[in-house]
Length: 222
Image (cartoon, rainbow, N blue to C red; front, side, top):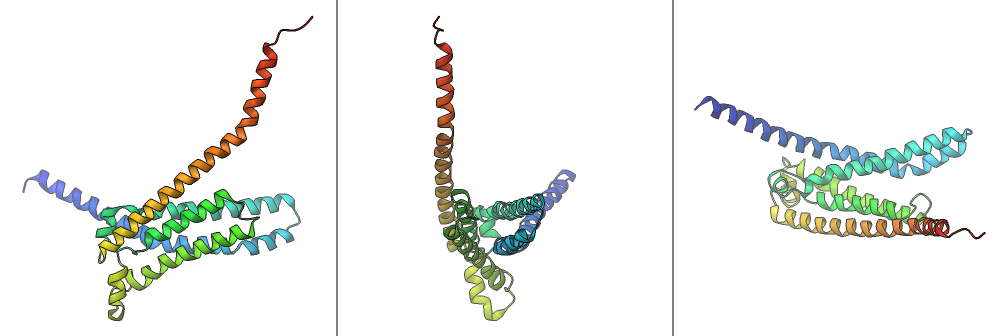
């Protein structure tokens, strides 16, 4: 082999190995993020009790804003990292939870509820968000623990083969494409909602500016 061929083979091996390592790291780290998302979301009553005992208004505001930033920021980060479940080549070749795309869909649905309703003030919206997060976490934890991480257990071989993406690629791709279609629908709905919301918010301001311009153009009556 020529030196160029050797260097190219080494480079390709490093790139392929690095990509597989990165994917495996993300998959292994996602349970931590899911756990933190659930803890912060379900820990809302504790945060509220702490706020009631806080005598300093500024401290209470900082505590509440920090909680909101961590809770919703982790939710966004978890959904962003879950995007690996929507890459067909990765889904077919790497051992991933087969319901990973469905868990990401539940995350986006929870985000949609948060963006469309006041979850911290609306009890029903909070329940919907909690249900979506619990369902999404279950869809992720179940196949990950009992299928992907239990491949060496003979008594779970059937479950592992059925709920691991690279051993059941047909079902995995169906779950991926259906989840992706649902995500596109949710994103489109959010876009339309934001578009109309911006229009309603800016309409009074635009009308007042037009009235002001019209009044400035009128000649003064002596």
